[in-house]
Structures are given as structure tokens and as C-alpha cells.
Image 1 (cartoon, helix red, strand yellow):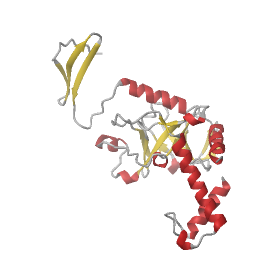
Image 2 (cartoon, chains in turn blue, cyan):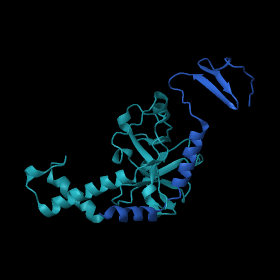
Image 3 (tube, one colour):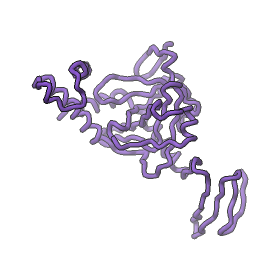
Image 4 (cartoon, rainbow over the protein chains, first blue to last red):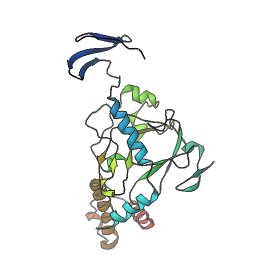
Length: 76
Length: 186
């Protein structure tokens, strides 16, 4: 992994079109500004982790779960 | 071809029904081939079954069923990733998580499965919209949709309303009969 040191207000350019700026430093928090073409996807890493967790939970389902739902929906 | 599955036993799958996920799903990157199993029950939930892993299957549903205003806003790069030229060629599904307490079942609206229906190429696409939840609880919405769907049919069979009183979008009696049959099967 490439590691760079930046001060407040300084930035990093990735390729020709992506720019990351250090906007604010407050204690243990860093605010970053990201300039990128519209089609670039930018997410917090936790989003991917959350999706992965949901996928794993979903894959544990069984037809018995659907049967229970089916029965429940059949009730008025 | 014959495919072995933990949940459904051995199934016959046509080659043209195999859906290719070149990147897999998040957390399941090594599984690239899936097909859809329709259990044909009233819940309208389908299964996305792995060919490579008999025990891996995800319950999926079309999100419009429980959230009519849902829009999966795809970027040009998303369209390219499943070789889509026209959004109308796509099928969109949400993966469902069904915990033991079924009333807290949820759908992943943030990262739907997008399938190019013609080319059978698919991807779990993470949408940029930050308001979309990965854990959208939708038990009530799904139940009310299904209960109204079922009671609709019951009215038609028992009351035998004159044609002018047909309230749904369906105008042909043939379609009504077909819907009744499918309810009976379930």
C-alpha cells in the first residue's frame, strides 16, 4: 500500500480525474473531500461490509422459512 | 444439465437459464453461476441458487412488489458491467434476509441483483443513493400486498361479479381463471 502524508488543505490526485482533499482534521477524525467523475462509485467501506453481512445472513434461509411466511400470510 | 442442491434436491437446469455473475456476490466472490428456482408459493419469493455450491441459495424478490416507488438508478458504468443497452432488458431483485422472527424480515435495497435478461449476465450492484437501506424491513408491505392479491381472487371466484364490476387491471376472464388456478395450486 502506498502511504502519503498530507497536511490540511493538501490533496492527492488519482489518475487524471480523481482528487482527494483533506478538508478538516479534528482529533481522531479526518474529513475528506472527493472530486471524481459522476460515474465513479464512492462508498464508505462499512457499506460493503454491511452488504456482505446481509448476503451471508440471507444465504442461511431455508424453504422452511418461506413455509412459515406462507402460513403467516395465509392468516387474516 | 442436472444440478445438485441442498434445499431442492437434484434439479434439471437448461443451459440458457444459467446466470453468470463474473464477480460473484459480495462475500461469495468465487461463485459465478446461478439459476432461479421458483417454489411457486404465494409469497412470490424466488431463490437464487448457486450451481457451484449446492448449499448456497439466496431468497430474492422483485422490490416493486413491496415498494412500488423503488428505482434502481444505474450509472452508465453499471449498465456496462452487465452489458445492458436498455434498462427494460434488466430484471431487478432484492436479496431477502428472513430471521427466525419473520416479522423483522428485510430486503437489501442498496445492493440489488441486476440481471441482463437476454445475455444472462448479472451483478450485485451497489447503488450510490445513500438513503437506500441494506436492511429495509418490509414484512408488513409484503403481507398486505399478498393478502389483497389473494382476497381479490377469492371475490372473483365466489361472487361471480358481472363483467362491469371487474375492478382490477385484468379485463380478460381467461387471465382471472389462470390466477385462480395458481392460487389453488399454492
